[in-house]
Figure (cartoon, each protein chain N blue to C red):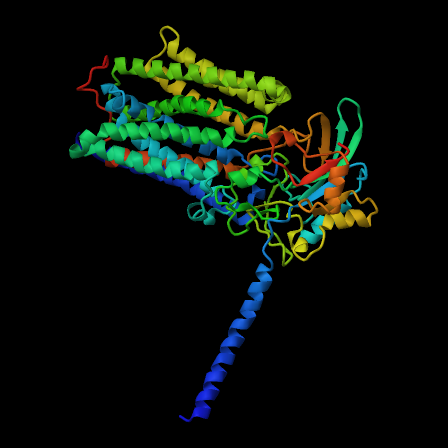
Length: 391
Length: 237
């Protein structure tokens, strides 16, 4: 690389870091504003208690686990094309988890009391288990990266990879359980949610991975080995189909228990059916599948667009699940029509506010910054010179 | 130093120490009072046939007792609300007050990551104002929509009802009154209005009026299917 090129790269790097820092700063200002004035400045209220920040945070936390797929296939199942991508997959996991947790933490009513979550631990709370699972993932992925990047530690990378694999499956189960244990709510309280979250993590994580890898290859003017592109896109297609399958099973079985809720979320609920069918099903699933599998499509640009669509679809799906799930009134008195000053029997209204969205974007900014600085400072570039795509 | 002086200094010192410590001990006693007893289970029996549609004296009394604004916007705090129900099949109307049901197995306590939500030995479910981090998971878990998040700074707080922006709160069963041996503000207001729809008492005492009534008349717990054994019972549903 000549000197001019190196200088240009450095300039672009600082530009990207500056951009990321700006987004993070906007998120911090939004969080400060919310803390100063209270959550009254957000769209959240006593019916929709979790809003846009949770959509962003849960996306990042779920994707943080899913992005480790690539590492798991490499280390646990011993596939060389994935092995070379394992370090990048570990870095992205840490970056996404840090971003997601930042959002979750800064959305708390009392973020300055976060230390209480460490000093007072309620063993029956799945939230408390998650505090433990999240910090564990940071530590174990850190160790895993060390075993991969430090030659002396290489023999340990397989057991470390196995530990990370098991841990992240438990972690995403824990994330799904946050909702699965809410037995009183029509949208949640079902055992299918944890496996659904795990499969969602596979698709979303791989989509994030593909986009970051494409950006890195683009920057370095490198071409992705077509055989590896084919493997990755087929895997993404399979994951998209698996998510559709589980989401379909979830809605069909839930229809048998809570028909009124399902009619609301899938047909009559205005924004929610629109986001579900238009956003998740069409844009986030059907269109990416078309881009991946249609003859003469499936090139690197098509897969890149497909990955971006999968991520957009995931936000729609989470919005419907989290916010739509709360908007429908709780069934406190089955068989009765209810009316009160507290929104009983009524569809809850929610309009995402700017501070909430900025806070969520700030979390994405944190992930972006960690990734950008990480790939610049250390060698995370996937190299396929010594591997056979057919392995 | 002669012995008189020595004695004076010794006694004086002891008196000073007593003066310094005693008020603290008194305050400590005041602050802690009697510990809640597990022999007691506070509860309510609400007779919906006596609850008048349109009357919200219980709500007003609660707001006054606990220093709540009384606002009814979606982000306003409401510890107790009046529900107007209509049987979908028969069209029969029912009016009743709804608040924290003070469950024996409270889901809010199970899910709270910091154990800020807790149940006293006498069955009253409360939020420790110092431990709540404002995650709102308890609100997601409560089957009765009984909890409110404080969305704005609070002013004019009552000295014995501490509240705070960014934390979750709900009906405390007027714990400050109960600990003084009084009844709850809502029950008192309902009786004052002549309805006497809310009966407050000790469910564990077989001789108490509430226990005798629950034994004699048909009552139900809301969402009994969830197996939470709420301390609030409803008649006429």
